Image 1 (cartoon, one colour):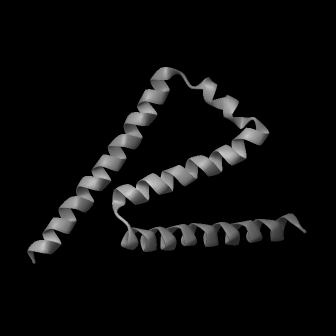
Image 2 (cartoon, rainbow, N blue to C red):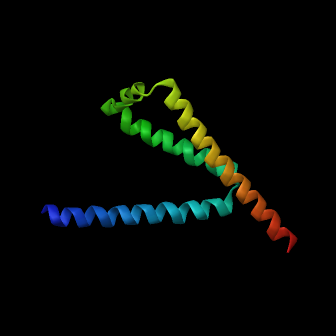
Length: 98
């Protein structure tokens, strides 16, 4: 397989994968609540990442991060989740009033 064809193939495959993630996450959010969805979504992400990292021993790279960096990343992730939850909660209240 030529590198030119391989590049287009992986770009197309990546596009399909990302569109499936968007479509199925929206469908899942219609069926379950945000908290349950977030728990399952991030739980599956952790499982998939562990299945990838453990056999290749890639988890050792996490030790490179110091405690301050880990706290900053945790704070950013928590803030984004909180903002998203609050925005979604306010929008759903507005639609009930109409």
